[in-house]
Length: 379
Image (tube, helix red, strand yellow):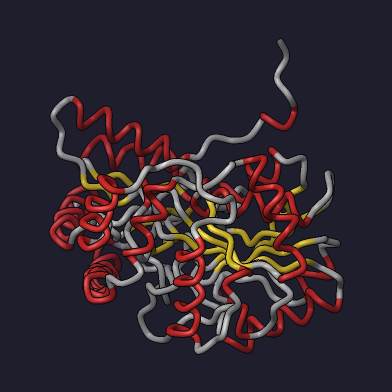
């Protein structure tokens, strides 16, 4: 049998790096993980305890496709607590992680062959999901002086039907301020371009609070997840907020594509929304790790980077040392046991001279990782 053209997507390099690290660990090597955007902390304690109680009294099975009504209500309250917004819970759709939300968003908004703009560097799976849905990903080359974010002229000149923006962004950790986000949304509306805001790193900010697109307009799709701030990557539960007029079409798609998000994960997410103290302690760990790397990386020769506003990544220009970031990171893994992601995952044009450090793990790991990197750099 032949393979479909839509199936010809690139590998997710960070997962390949993770597999290489796993193989090294299986041989007894101690690997410091700075490649994957996975918090070193588990799901909140009160959330796991709540699930443990519920699992004995609750017959887990299908839920309604849009998600547990009580979870949708609680997510809507989060927008009141974080952004002072009165959000109708009927607009909240619980999804199978943010990945499920991207599939639902792209399928709901775009027809086959339409062009969708994504910032480069950016999360690589945007591009591959779009390809698999027979859509055309349009890489918008962003610049450091614009915080590695698209700017309004990019919308018209790229002839796109949709624009996906992430703030805080992966891999750079950069954020759009409210005015910059408003300028993009206004330009999108003027050019009849659908606007999608990826906000899965909201809650993990350092100098100022992130702005949600919903503070500016209701005519957009907003995507979030319990994976990052709530430390629930493997639970595969996220959410999206859509205009009221789009709820039913998204519901029909969700019914047929996913049936529903995992019931146990939804129950856990429900309690995780009350774990404020524990979650803020996690953010304090990221703050400390960020400070360590910002101070230590220049001492190793990694001087060309922009300090992240949010998320838990630092994106570094390594053109001084290599024009093959994939081989460079392979050597670091082999020689000193530190797993790092090459920039090729995030920027197909310039990624051969960039790498991404993730500082989502424990502070002890970050300190040990910097020691090993100094050894690799002969410092």
